[in-house]
Structures are given as C-alpha cells and as structure tokens.
Image: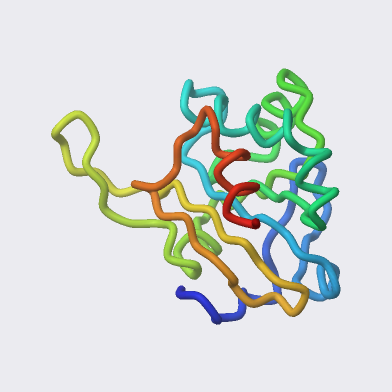
Length: 152
C-alpha cells in the first residue's frame, strides 16, 4: 500500500473477539501499527511507547490499533501485562498484514526470513493512508514521539 490508498473494510478481530472495520472507524483518524511478536523486546518497547503517549495521541485526534499474527489469547496476555489501552488485532492467517504490505522477506541476524514488517500507517477519517513509517524509520522506544513530531 502507499499514501492515498484506502485500507480494506475488514481490519480483523481484536484480543477480545471484537470485529474492527473501516466503517466503524469512519470519521476518526487512527494509527495502525504492525509488529512481529507479542512480548519481545522491540515490540514491547514500541507498544509501551504508544501506551505512554496514548493521551497525547488521542488529543491529536488519533486512535491506536496494533496488528500482529499472534493469537487473541497472546494479545490478551500482552495487553494485560503492559496495560495497553488500545485494541490488538489477531491476524493469525496474515490476511491483513499481506493486504497492507506489512508481510514479507526480512533479514534478521544475517538470515533471510518471511514475517511481519514493522510498519506504521497514519490513517485519515475516510480510511485512506496519510503517512507510512517504514521498518527502517521506526525507533521502537520513541515511536510515539516520532509520530507526534510528524503530525506537526
């Protein structure tokens, strides 16, 4: 996906089994961030960065939604352990990740693997992508500050 593209209607189901659709989000801006795995150091740092700046992000007019291929049960434990105030979509079949271009080949420790590409999408009130933070741009510990700075 690229800037200006519209996200798919069905985003997925969160850790509590709630369906999240683009229609539900219409009229609201939101941050859709994809991450590789619950409870890993980088993913935890990123989630906690967004949690710690959640009020500021909301004040700027943005909701937050996370996505990974982990199960709803894994997401529940992750969200509870770190007091995450936003939904986490359990994309276990990687349908959404593939559709939005956040699934592909990456190199980890010199080895090529296929998996989730850490990506953040800023989405407008109509469900169109305003900005994409690529995997190379994202600094997990300060990601919320990166987003807030980009909004100015």
